[in-house]
Image (tube, rainbow, N blue to C red; front, side):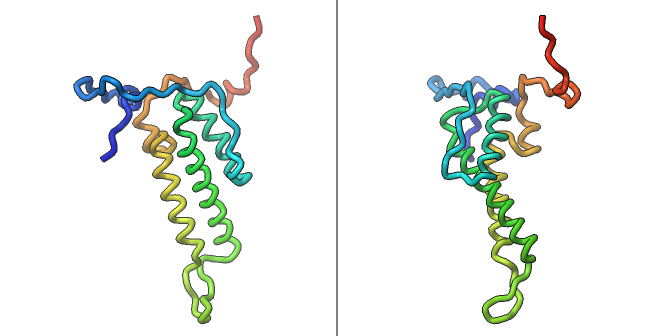
Length: 152
């Protein structure tokens, strides 16, 4: 079983000081959102921006995690692409023999969603994972986000 990072344990309120490493690796949260990797598709780049924005807002966007975020965005985009193919061509397609078979896009869709969810759990992106992480960022309602800031 993988060890949960100390910062996550602190946020969850489950930190037991008896099990804290003296020289645990410390990472620094990034100040800015880096540009999306060039190898990501246009859709995955949009996901990159949305994901990194949320992680930065919660002070958990770090440079060492960028490859995992890239993989998350790529997997989620693969899921969307597979779902579009299934919508267009159907879940059952004819095999070379002529018999109907389940479309290969179905297994691609299922596996990419599983991979995205597994990676998303590491960052608190899934609803269940979010309930286990406390954040010092106060949620903003839609009405509050529309209000203009007061200038003194």
